[in-house]
Image (tube, rainbow, N blue to C red; front, top):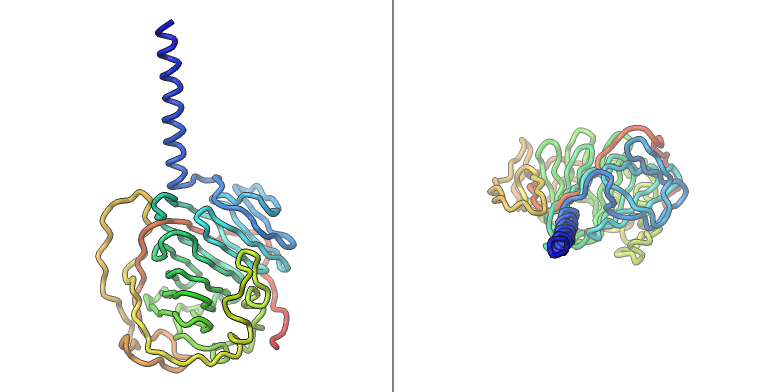
Length: 323
């Protein structure tokens, strides 16, 4: 009898330890197919595809690691991830929830988002801010307590609109610029040239794409972020003054760490420049001058990777009209 009681107690203790270890592991890194967030708003059709098993998302549905999320040409999707990062996807947008690493106790890990098509709004969660990295077809973006919109044109040119905080944009050419004036824009061309911050009316190509197509969450605020930081008219008609260019604070190749990775961080390297670089204290060049200065960003910490895939909806089309 004593032996039976001992074995029963041992089994219970083992189960508790296993459950604790399982929770701690999930707290740090989700496995393929594990829930890492949920849908907060679904308009029209938003599809999720995991291992070729496609489903139509509804409000409250979980989204899972390694799942492709794709929005129809007239749709919209809004999501909250487990670290409280919020994402809004406009018509024709597409991403993949590749990887999620997050330690809720330490508020640490690495968040990496890979956005491949369409219009997005990104709002940082509770993780320490330098740990976020957003990848686009031709540039990487690090953030500092930030709300910003992003639009990927059909030729993979990227437009960025800052609402709050600051972002550092590094191109494939290892050129980095800082955007820290809310209401201004920054362009990354299809060949990886990073422009200087400009106002809407000075953004190259803005006459060809209606403002509300590129940035649908300005006039119609998403439910995950219902109070606009800046009004549409202030952004569209903005005449924000030029300020001296700033050097990026995170030079070095991006490094994704697990939440429990205590290995020493790499030393910062001096930011590299290209042939037509300018000193970090120089005034901005003309709005159509790209690749003014910078270097690649470094990152450590917490990790979500959202990557592109194939199939599903075919891109959207331009619509609407500027006022």
